[in-house]
Length: 295
Length: 274
Image 1 (cartoon, rainbow over the protein chains, first blue to last red):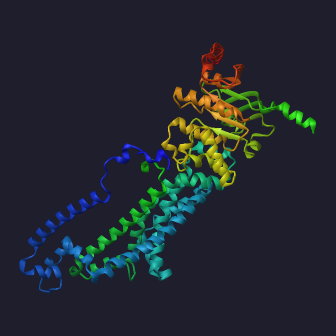
Image 2 (image 1 turned 120 degrees about the vertical axis):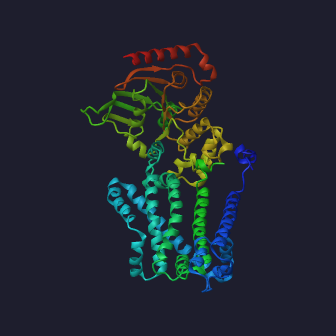
Image 3 (image 1 turned 60 degrees about the horizontal axis):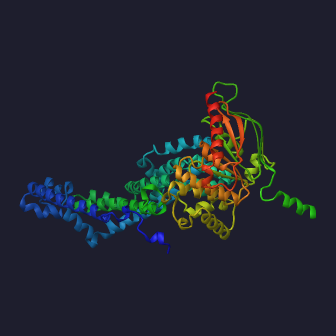
């Protein structure tokens, strides 16, 4: 509507830019092609011709053991891809992945809220910060491996376990970064609020929280991937469903499941990647005013 | 009734009351009587008429910014009494009598220009309709109507400082405290904003206390110039500026303008070599 907005804003906007997924996809293709070549060479060199079909299916007992594990060590990407798209595998790969992701996301939200709230409480006075922060730090020294069995024995529910652990790994970075953000407000911006006799709540809502958001998002991006890892790790200790369970079982059941195991690894990393991207896109939208996102 | 009317007409556009009064104000940073104690201000006594434009000028370390912060209740004096329209600085601040403009624009990056101007009104819970109207009127006044929906970082430094002034005036404060507001701008922009500021000031009854390093700026803008000396900060002289108003670009070429500039310079040289 305004004439000013219709005019091109700057050269930067018109600068030629590759669509974002393109470079990523090119790298993926290069890796896959190289991997396929190396894996086939390795496979053909290690497995005698008469055992090749058996080594791939993993079902033939006549194949010598050292030839059977070849697929486990370096699988053919073509077989991994076909494992990923085979409808029979969908429940164990994609559905399991979604179950894990759902818990991780819920835990991430819960942990994010707790972390943020804790930071706001600690930001009130140095005394509260000094009293609480050491415990928050100590909590991160306890490995998830040690917590998993305890959580299971208390709650006896794998969803609760996943959510708790995802929340547990999320809250800490959010607390530390938010606290720093709330404290890093420009003194003049604060003096302005003081001169306006703004209430404490107004100072938070209108100044401290918006100013802390870049710090919060930095933590959320770290926590997005960490919460997925946390959920997967806790699944290894007694869950019945989830991508962690698939990884564990395909390992137990041996070389016949090699390509499914690798498929599960691909799914697990995709979960973290997608979650990270969602948070990063939200950040870009919420922090349009940040220097790095300015058009 | 009749007397009341008479009195009101006598007061006229520029009320003659005292807006700012300081009596023997001293400020020491750090614990007194120790090596760390820094005496920033000593025995400052000053009165500023309502609606007047007063500049504080002096070398670095003369405490002029500290004095401004004392007036705005951003600092409390170690000794002495400050009255703003008959109230303590704290009471005046809580009554929202101050608009503040800093050397940096201090705009909130996440707010558009219009939202930045509305910030004080939001803090004061003014209704949204009125907020928008007042912001629009002020942006018109500072010539930034077409930038209302832009973000601060899309504006030049001079434009940002105009937004900052519009924000400070948005709630019609009775006292405007300005801490070297044009110090970071180039000479041309500074002179243009000087004229704009005088226009804005003539449309309000605001008392302005203005800290500056620039002698020409102080002479062009002020009714009175307070020359301060450093370590500890004291008032050296108060110079009345009897240049005609309204002051325009031509004022800077008047012979009397140069005389006043020379006079202020003379005093500044004196305090600097003490």
